[in-house]
Length: 228
Image (cartoon, rainbow, N blue to C red; front, side, top):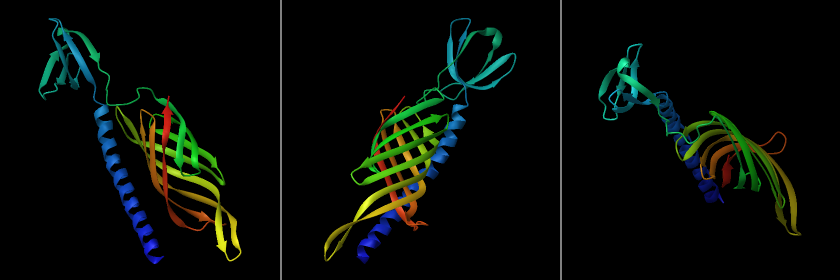
């Protein structure tokens, strides 16, 4: 029993370290992504039909300085231009500010859940609700975007949840059921692929009773949540 509890504590410690490392890494990654997304990617067309691609380094009323993909800088007089096209930054998965989400997940809070939500720019939320057998649960995830590209969104998420389930109690006279009411809060990392795959891993602090006991638990959800 002591060995089992030691293994569980070790697993929780490892997951906590992995979660913190992921969050710290993607906070730095997102800062770099936002800096790069503020740079305008353009194609300029000269009067002789020559096209040049690059990013704007400097511009004023008479000229534009661009940096080409090879790193060279070129000053172009506006009088020599016939067209300037701003290119779509293909780094981002969605080019609209608002998206919705709806689908199904397994495990926390109720083994089988309906999960839906909404995102506006870098902020969003998901709510999970489920019931399977004696299990019932609801969970709320306020989220902020850490990183996103052509394939995925990665979120840092807060977690607030509540679940109920029957806990069997074994004794000399057989087995009885004790109804457990468990509330919890914590944080998690949410990975959401454009194809719908969703993975949510985190740690929560909570427990049963009033006030609830304070126990660290692993939060885990995986499933398909369509984005629209």
